[in-house]
Length: 233
Image 1 (cartoon, rainbow, N blue to C red):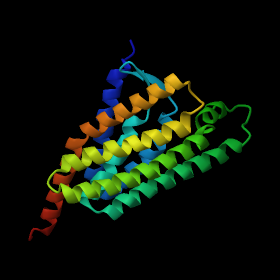
Image 2 (image 1 turned 30 degrees about the horizontal axis):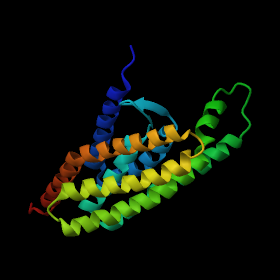
Image 3 (image 1 turned 135 degrees about the horizontal axis):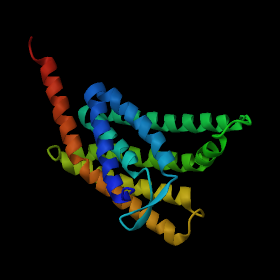
Image 4 (image 1 turned 45 degrees about the vertical axis):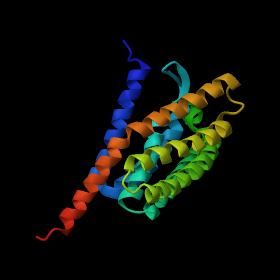
């Protein structure tokens, strides 16, 4: 018996939060840089798969893409705005490099024994349009997220949950508008496109809301490590 998509979605959520926590726990900011790179690539592969979740037609990739915003928020909170912006551009570079390298890989004429050219073409053949859409949405939304996060930090220095949630939720709306229209306009019927837009944004909103404990843990963990490093031996 196969698992219900809704249960798998919550499992995916738990796994992603666990991995980003482990990345920060063991590798500090470098782990978050690596996670942003990983999430930018995997999200643009997962988004090619359409599923039904909670009664809506939607695409995958919402969770891991949402955690890239969590990673930049942690970098901005624990390190600096400069480090958060650095992570954004690392994600852009990773996506461009992956797309270019895989497009060249598809140019190779496969041997008669090859069985993977077709699946690779199905996945990466569509990626140039996805890449352009994703990079445009990613740059606009992530830079807005970093800017808005620090504006909220100035206005509400003691309210971490406000800047974490509101910066991500609004930037995700911007991202969703740009990406959905650029990537899927003309690909799906208008009714399906609207369902994808609504469902993906709602799921990203849930991801942003539920990641609040993670950023609180990250900030407290970082502060403890800094204090321990300064403590006299």
